[in-house]
Image (cartoon, rainbow, N blue to C red; front, side, top):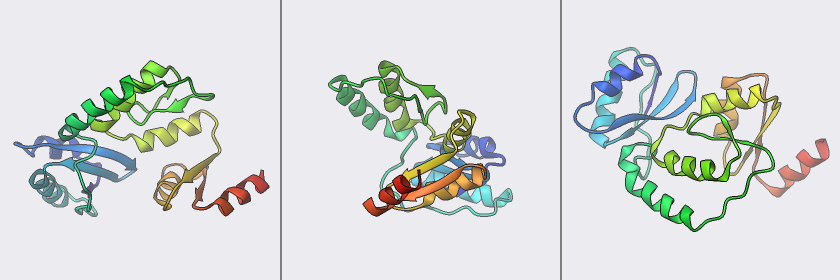
Length: 174
C-alpha cells in the first residue's frame, strides 16, 4: 500500500495485532507499507482518515521488506555463506543503511537484512548526490526509479536504460 509519510509511526503502531511496516521510503510523500493484508488494509484506512492524498493497495506477490519475510532472509543468509563477494571498485549505497559500503562481509550482512528491512530509496538518492553523483542510470524494465529520483533531487539527471540501443546512446553521449 502507498501512504503519505505524515504520521506513519502512529499508523504502524495502530495496526495491532499483525504486521504493518514501512517497506519502502520511495520519495517525499510516498511510503510503501508491507505486512499482513488485513493490517495493511487497516493502515490504508488510517492513512486516508489522517489526510493522506492517496492510500492504495499494490498488487504484490509477497509482503516484501517486513518481518514476514524472515524465512526468506534465512535462506538468503545460507546462500550467501556459499558465495564469494569481492570488494566493489566503487562503494555501493546499501538500501538498508543509505550509506556507502565496500567491505564484503558487511555487504553480505546487509543483503540479508534487506529482505526484511525498509528500502531507503529517498535517502539512497540523497546519499548518491552527496557523493557527487550527477547522473543515475536505471537498468531494467520501467522508469519508476528514474521518476522517483527526479522527485527527490531535481539536480540529478535520471536516465532509464531499457535496451542495448539505450546503452549505445549513453556511451555515445559521454
